[in-house]
Length: 146
Image 1 (cartoon, helix red, strand yellow):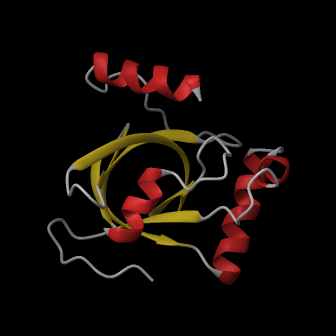
Image 2 (image 1 turned 180 degrees about the vertical axis):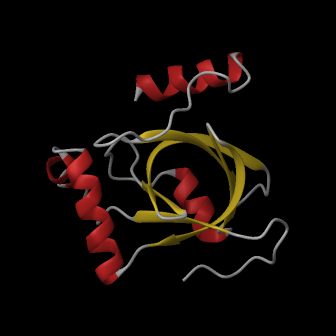
């Protein structure tokens, strides 16, 4: 978890010039996710690992594999519209939890990237959400999460 705190500081200190990277074959990348606080309504930022699935970005709702859901995921459940920043720039997205066949496919792909995925996931008492960040039209209407 200390890695992510240092990583966030590097992003802040360099104005985002260092600390975000694209996924490479067999590896995940990093992005900065800005959500809307579910209680405060204020912007909240976090850095998460991701991979690309067509136009979508895929991440895991983990909290250092601790039992609690990460705050950013709780925020997205309340307000699914968010902004991501990658090495390529900024984009507006709408989040949803992958379900059924989509979840199985995306989980399997993540397991190819991280051979310890099942071991880590077993530490959590609940299923880890696979979060899909799908492109949306800038300024488009918010849709309920489903």
